[in-house]
Each structure stands twice: as structure tokens, then as C-alpha cells.
Image (tube, rainbow, N blue to C red):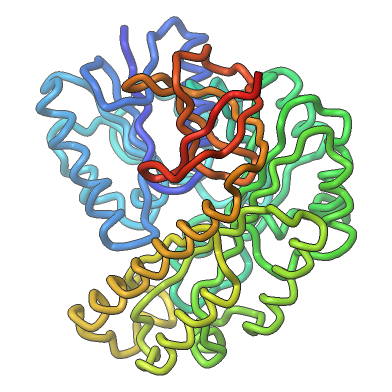
Length: 412
């Protein structure tokens, strides 16, 4: 029997999907994370935007074309938010939500809707079985922030954190080349008073490369950065969610920092890690965003000198505060997105140019069209000539920009 676990959305979904892959493999399934012909499909859905929900629902038709007789289990945020459209799909068998995903593998023969009650306890899953060289390790779930545009706290529930010994144990057992710590709000990690810096200190003896998922800027302080310095192999890439470069918009978004505070944290990172990659998310077209606010966002992005930006258009989510606000015309939002994409491109190019001639360690991932691909510590997409074994660590020097990253030469 062949199974596909297909993931939409965030890296926390990736963590949960990798755990399902592990469980299916233990049950004797041949498992893939690619959308290909199989007997069983588990689709881990996303609801962060209306488009993500739409794509989640469309998976039914895409799977039907591959195998009209396949069994489909839908799970995740989109099904938690609105299970009915998924239940109506002709090839859907079981619908679950975001809680008790560890029970899905015991329900493979069941059908219908089974949305579990929310919990205040962190739910342990099977150790991940990643089909990639890096493993996504879930250490936190839920969110208490309630940003005015975000539906996720209503779906994922309150913040809850994983016991540090279980985090260390999973990384030790899985033994990946790189472990990426993830959470719905990773910065909120707090296990019986142990904060994220404390968790990092517990990982000081781990041999694999440690990378962090998305962070809130206010978690950055001297204690946290010192803890990261103490790791054997830390990848200095910080994804700090900005969302807007206008203080007026940040206040309406219910983001609990100002642009000056954000910049202060960026400067502190660069004090400890001068070549760090600092990436971000930016929402364009928030309902209260004026043209002046948007210009401030572009100028602030340049001031920070992000190494990359993930920009996306504001998507009204029913049930949130921002849903009741007057949405901006789509053409206005699209025009702003296009302008921000230009800023993104120029900043990414400038960062790569700045890194020319510097030495990095790349973990080989896959070989495509004469080049081995992977990522540097600071998250530059690397293209290295030749076929290098997946998982091998190689010392390289950046020579020139290429495609969506840069070309590197191996240091002999």
C-alpha cells in the first residue's frame, strides 16, 4: 500500500505531517510527501488566507485525477475552521481538525467528521521521519497574541509548550543533519517557566545544525543570543515577522512593538551574528493602510536591509477583528504587492552581493541539472556544481548570484 502525506501551509504542519509519515512507515506503507498516485492520502490543510483554504479544498479534485478510488483524510486548520466543504467532497473519507493528530493513524478505517475538542496540553506525536535532509521539530503550539488579522489562535487554541527533554530526545533519535525548531508562536515557548532561551541552552550538546522557525522580534535579547552562540552548530537565520513598517498599521494589527523596537532587535542580532540572514513577512493592503503607510513600510524594509521578504496581500478572515474593517480595493493591494516585490528582489540581491567571497557550510539536499542544491547557514539558496551525496556537509565560497540564490565553489 502506498500513502501520500501532502502538506499545505506552515512549518508546524510540516512537523505534524512528518510524524504521520513516520507512523505510516511503521505500519508498512510506502510513503511519499509528493502529490503522486497512491491508495491513501492525508492532506494537512491551511486556513491562514482565503487562498490557502481554497487550495486545500481543491486537493480533492487533484487527487481524484491521480486515483479516483483513493481514500482521502483531510486534517488541519482549514477543516477545523469549516469541515463541511471537505465532508461534501465525493472522495473524502475522514475529516479531522488540528487537535489529536496523533490519533489519525488509529482511524484510517473510519469515515465522517471527527473534530476533537481543544486542549491546553501539548500533544506529543511520533518522532518525525523526514523525507528531507532537515527535520522540522515542533516545540510549541497555539497562540495568545490575537493579531487583528489572524484566524489561527481561534483554530489552534492557546499557547502550549513541549517538555525540553522530549525535544532533545526527538532530535537525538531522529539524528538529522539539520533540525528546525518550530511552533505556531515559537517565541512564546514556556515550559513551567523555562523560556525559549532556556530550551536553546538544553540543546547545547546536540551535534546537528540547529535552525529556528519564525520569531517575534521582542524575543530577541542578550540572553537568547548568548544561548544561540553556545550551540555547537547554529544556523544564523532569523525570520522576524514584521507585517508592516508603519507604526499606525502595527497598532491596528494589534502587534505589540514599534518599528524602532524592531530595528533595535535587528541591530542586536547583527552585533552577535554579523552575517545573519534576516528575513520577514509583510502584509500589504491591511484595511487601514494608507499610501503613506505603505511607503513607510518599503522604506523601513530598506533600512533594515532584509535578506529576503515574504510579502502577501491582506486576506479578510471571518471571525477576526480586521474582518469588520473596510477592505481596500484589490487593484490597490495588487499594485502595492508588485512594488514590494521589487524591493524584495533588490534587497535579496544586495545581501547576496555582500556575501560574495565568504565561506559557508552547505548541507547537500538534491541534485538537479548538474548542480547540487542546499542552503547556507544564513539561508541563501546554494547551487554547487557536481553531484554531491545528499546530507553531506561541504565547505564552499560564494562566487556569484544565480537563479533564486547563488553559485558556490567547493573549498578543496
